[in-house]
Amino acid sequence: MQNNLGVSYILLLLGLLLGASFFVVRQVLRTRRVEGSLSQLESKLSRETGTAQEYYELGCIYNDKQLYSQAIATFQKSLKITDSQENPQNLAMVHNALGYAYFGREQYDVAIRQYKEALKLVPNYVTALNNLGYAYERKS
Image (cartoon, rainbow, N blue to C red):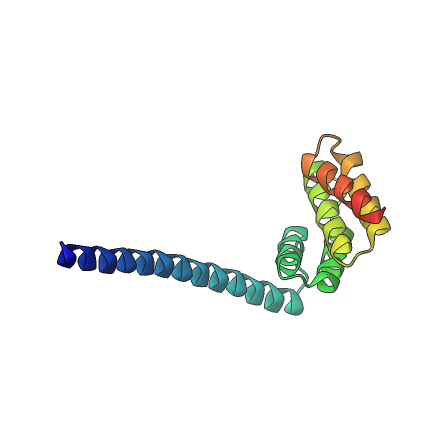
């Protein structure tokens, strides 16, 4: 009986360690993938002008890393090179992400303006509506 209890504890500990190892390895691989994308996009966009999509992707990575100043500049470049034929959903996503970057810098009025711009393009854009409400809540 006593021996079985010791084996059970060791097996439980081994299971916990294996589970924790799995999550650590998964996070390391995810982080490496994001860092690789960041490095690739930064080097490409420093050499040549990219597409609006590439600037958007880079801005999203900056937002995830809470580098809001870089994200704002990148999203503004994305908006500058976007043509008038662009899908309104894509433009709304850029405005929403730009609003998120301004929100991160606690510039709530500018963030609200960007969220409203996203909602002009796509009136039922739920994420922008949610972000707009949160920005109004933080502003007051």
